[in-house]
Image (cartoon, rainbow, N blue to C red; front, top):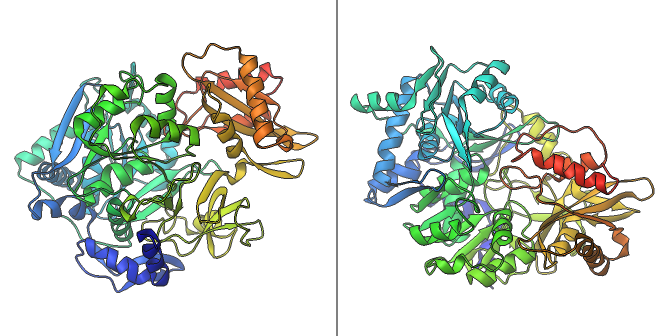
Length: 632
């Protein structure tokens, strides 16, 4: 048996003993009364324990004599600024900022909303909240005022911490007017604002509410004030992170302190194969769950060095930015979204930029956030000559559900699969009636409850919605809302969201499976397939493809080849007859393609601009492309 199989069986045979052993890697102020218990009908871990997340992420490394080790590297090709912070320097920054928060009246249990760009102060703010037991809620910087207002109303923060602006390629985004408008729209009015003034743009502070962050910090430092770590319950919330809800009302995913500490610390050596002192880079944003888990908390809990990158995979300044960062900072493992690699592949299909940098220290590439098509995985493998590991998880789980665990003995790669379930997750594939389907059969991917430590115990202030959203459809299971299958070896294949499974003349088909076929076309950089309404067949698939840079062939030829590929590999049953070449696909800022919005446009349904969209103009381009085919 492999080390992975032994580890998974050890968890299966005694989950409580497994997580008790993992919890030994965490400093506890008071041990738990129950490693697992039902509390108010909800699953909770380490009940009765006291701990502090900031202590485990920062102070304990200093106490252990590692204060001089690099904790955080800030690299901003957008501004040209770079900074390094040791664990001792991070402790000083965080403890001083936490004292400033206390002086503003923030106490344990208060909510603090962060509306921040990718600057070190965002990390300091998260850790400062954790230090004093305040609950942080990070909202992606640049979110529209109406969306920010809904989060203010739900979380009811006492304080909003923000920067004067965010930097995008070619433009500066003023944050303060967006925040002011959101507060005007919101019913709940935060008592305070704390604003970090960036040199690119100064914000006008609102008298009586807003405070200058740097000035407040300087005064706190002059007074010699530093906050100590406050004991909190393991079951107390560390943060609330909002994810899009199907009703348009965002869902506040709650992350507790104790289970989160144990699970994330366990993942760093076992899943990612990282040792303390090594450099780990998650090329995401602190506004997303990847940023929370793998820019901030997991690397620091493990005593590793985290990278905070303010830039884009291409255009800041070129498609070699990722390789420059890896070479310059000695990155051992990179975690990013497949969309980033598709963007690099589109701009530099031959990988010429890769050869310009010394990547000899680089060991592993991890992909997650959306399906990693085999073509992109193979491209990265061939050019980087390192393992390319697709893995799958969700905002709700906070850490990988399925992965290829580097630290437990890497398993064989099967293209298109994020490999196998991790300890803690009993993954099943169910039909609509809640019965397990045969191996290889498409179904709803669910996880037998209880969920492991680190996953959401509930939604903020709404246990009833938590149950109805995740637990009621399949009693005894957590519903992931992803569809796919499991093969004979237990490898999972995530093919689509359950609402992206289309029914064509009685046949259930995965749009993700069709995308995989289209992505294999030599001229295609990336693609999306949606199901649109059809009077005769119920739904039929329509494809959108973006071509690689430098392709100068006739559009009609490529479209015909794409249709033929689907016919050959999936069959005439797919009824795939329409494909269109577009310049780009509409995406969220985290790189997810907005398929549901595209579908509504094609079906002439009412739709509203998604709050997370990266560039609204792209939806106009999609609308025009559909009209050229007589759709939308």
